[in-house]
Length: 282
Ligand code: PAF
Image 1 (tube, rainbow, N blue to C red):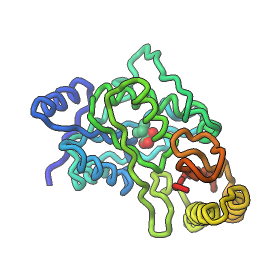
Image 2 (image 1 turned 90 degrees about the vertical axis):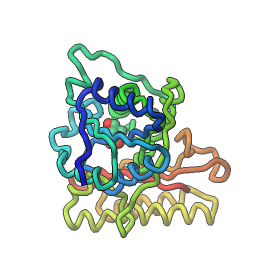
Image 3 (image 1 turned 180 degrees about the vertical axis):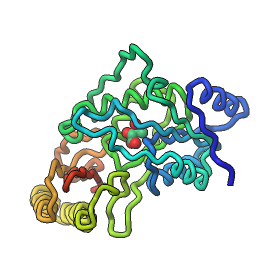
Image 4 (image 1 turned 120 degrees about the horizontal axis):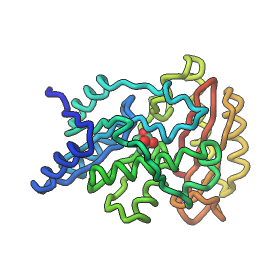
């Protein structure tokens, strides 16, 4: 198996993608921060189904980490990532440097409202989505893909990026890809590697509590008792709960009723030094 080619500059990326476009190829972009797992590879596979060329960006974006979050602790596994992308048949890796993405004097940030300001991740990580949206906007502009693949695991991010692409006419169709889970239901995440064995065993409670809550909401038409039971189960398992909320699936606003528009149940909780997020359709 030959190695996936790597480009490190916007100029080199545009040259390759430009040649593909001239040849009539349809291009998918999979934005990542590396430390790739089966969830990322599912994005590549989904991209392959809808496009003829798949570009994977690997860039640990400093702008989406707050000073309290340890950017240096973020896992960097480039050689292993490149190997996995070869097996998944990606066509190109875009791995820019920090100065390539944020040149001296960089002064522009995408300003967000709508699904970026609904009291979920934004309440706990206020600088996160402006950092994500800015880098994703740059990646779209650098690569100019037809489509871009984002995991439903980061559900608020998916809604923020979808809204941005539509609002700013970025010419990219954002496609959400279902979450890949471990056998016990834990959503795959690059953060799972930080869980100790007892924390990892406890972590299944997130999916178990969410699925039990959605079943109860569907059966009774009432949200609050089901949410209270799920919150108690998560805390009982040793987590500190940031939120467990159900929301309108598109706007992420609190829904007026349990029936009607599609709903999403979203959770964020901390155990030890690890913060996990997850969500499912109600
Ligand atoms: O989901 C991620 O890994 C990141 O937030 C993204 C979309 C690659 C932007 O840095």
